[in-house]
Image 1 (tube, one colour):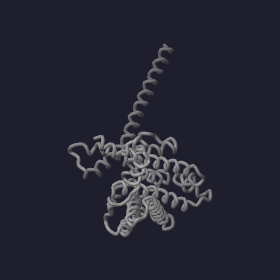
Image 2 (spheres, one colour):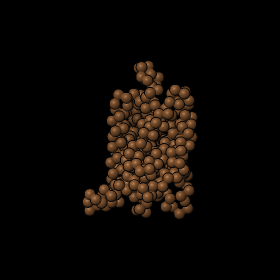
Image 3 (cartoon, rainbow, N blue to C red):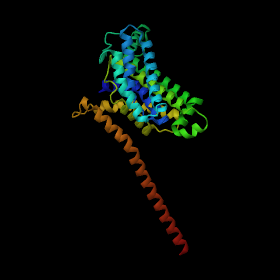
Image 4 (cartoon, rainbow, N blue to C red):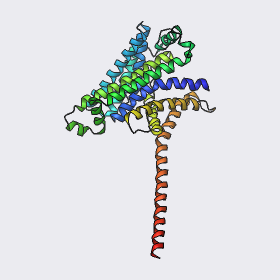
Length: 320
């Protein structure tokens, strides 16, 4: 159980990068971007393919970010310049990326078990620097990935507070209004989707190196996992400010992985039920807040009704 929870914490922090990307497209831009299922694999495919050719893992990871950014930009161009429906443009790019990812890898699966990865280099650094005597090497991935994820979170926060970031937020809220102020909404949407998918591809590159392989089916259902992380985080931690919301998204990704790990420990559930578990978690996260709010509203109505009756009784006593 402890091992499963520890592994869930590690993977949850990595998947949080993908959840941040989904948050940017779905919440900030209000764009249902299904490119995520393809760009996640693109990140892993680019990183894995470059690593097996001898490229340094860090360079390969940076290339994966660029590939994800370009994929998101193409989706944005299809929507803004091609006038294609947002949902359909994402689907088209996701389908195209399936073949592109196969081309990049050359086959359906690329193994990294005998190759150097960021996490293997990290373990070697941990041992050689003497950090192992203070902090167990098993904690190295969690500590370093937490720093990376939080750094990306703060960069996203800072970006959304810049003039361009505020314009992107305004575009997601009301395109007509921001366009009336002479802002180029097409460019803002393209940029926003590019950054969103760059974060998704970064997560995919890390996951491929963490798992020790890149697979063409790695991104199936990834958009649902990202949405689950965003919804769970917002429901549990709130959305009062951008800083708080991005923290909530990271927390939601970690909690999602832990819940899935615990669910798979149930005797009658199997690994193949993971998609069903994800669907149930998302349904619960969507329905629970509304049920709780309805319950609170009924409670408030009863209280108001009780107060009105009490006031009427007091008025009646005064008149008597």
